[in-house]
Image (cartoon, rainbow, N blue to C red; front, top):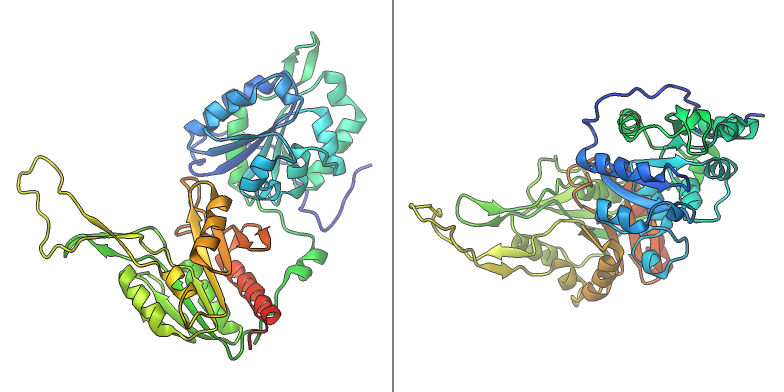
Length: 442
């Protein structure tokens, strides 16, 4: 009997087209390797995905390690392989919840009958099945099993149920099997799976929550910050090299400006200190335009006193020693030497100020060791909350429309699903308002 539920994503029985992979650059794939003889093919799959520019993380079941070693996958992905649900090492660095949400698509290859059955029934007794149950993204399964196992009604019912939940399938192929039999059940070839992955990513891969749960997460922040002064920094800073050139970063200011708008909607008096961005000033804010880190530092101090400070800006850590004239090549064979000077630390300054706001929130944009770096920043800067996000080479946070973050406080880490920057701003302001209420900030 097939299960149908209106709250689940609509069933898609479409055949995934096999097209030349060209649209995988900077996409994030979480590969779950099941315990079957076809696991060796997954090594080639990883290699092909990496060649296409995709970032790949790997989760292995205990059975998978009987066929291929974790070291083989770690060597190909240049990142750790995850294989334990309760690991003191990996849980400090990346939670299984974050692992399930950080990818653009989950791929199970090989997908054994056992793994399909556990996923279909919601069992989560290891890391692989826990990730499959916790994810908010579509999953592409590449089945691999004996003909009789594939043809069994229980397996077919499990596949139908997973399709009802929004899962996609590629294969299996028909051919000779390791057991000596012939028929459908061979895992598709890596090239076919890569094509199926690209085809899947041409469509929305985010799975919505069932409607009855969506209302529980909606935050009505109307007037939640009435009477409070909120200072927000946003965008990049430009640090002059000479009168013509400068050092900058790829921050667009979209997240900071969205947070300023959400704070205005919550009734706050908002001072937005913006670096150079191509965005209109949010309505209802006092917007102060600055260029350099030192400009932003001075503006942030001048904006005090405030009840809440939210440092979203991607501020340059260094500036170049001043040069009055344009630096020319003048036929020199070597590049000119640039002397870097450390910029003032805005977040630490505000957190240690005699006029310290009751709540100081910082952002941490990292390319590695995200959670540990964010925890260190929370302590070193002396702030109350850090919003951490990954801006590595496979991330589209800078300049993009979405963000997925971790909220770090002294109480622990809370990982949020990927969402639009506007939705994240609303949710963050709701969290900040609740925190202010708990602290008795009037």
